[in-house]
Length: 346
Image 1 (cartoon, one colour):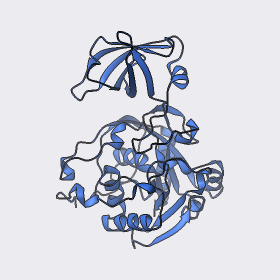
Image 2 (cartoon, one colour; image 1 turned 180 degrees about the vertical axis):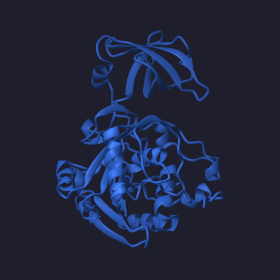
Image 3 (cartoon, one colour; image 1 turned 90 degrees about the vertical axis):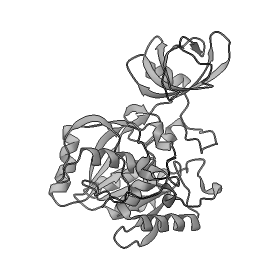
């Protein structure tokens, strides 16, 4: 049954600031792994390279192969020379993007922007009600290659350290450019872990969900049902859908890597827990009381207090179990959020 009176404050926990990971560990798979049994609430403390112990032959692990764009750009206004910061949010067509501009108030329709030696030019063509700007770009060559030259990774607002290696905010299997943020549960996987998973006979399926900045937006409403979810683009191919369905039909588990994969699977799953190839936009909001159709287990990071993501994991494992696990993680000085440690809900 859906818990219609759940308050946002029900999902608060106290997190000391020093536990927010500012940099990634040297070895991806050396993160700690909190193992939570959703049926008993029991907790084990492991390392991420132990994750294969919780997967069985014939299970299907589902990863999100989206690639983060170096979507933070710094340029100047052509008329005044004032410095502006731009964040690419959503591609509209080959040259047009929905963006976040700072400072925004003076960035009116018609304003022209210049980025590094005229490598990239932009013009504001529209301003949305939420303050986001539509910018039409001019450039020679391939836009993604110019972005690689000029752009910085759009790290979350709680990370204050400079990222030395761009690739560390990218999964090793990232393939489809389009995200404004990384699907961070996947950051723990390296080639060795992938190899161990395959050798155990676990199926690996891929889908794509381009993560939007709405991921970091706090829930501001008192009751969670009043919150409006952002929408994100996803796609799942025929071959990958077949892999997921085989595990389901064989009575095996579907293990989702991250809340992004989870939201996609639950958007496209039917009442029998089967999926079909498709693409589209999802604004699914998963919170306690939701009945999961496809996902049996979840590998995830530790999420912000009062966020939609902690509500999602609470829906899978039970709010009491999650809040207890989070308090245990704080007590044991786990590292939190994007560059932090991991959890598997089994």
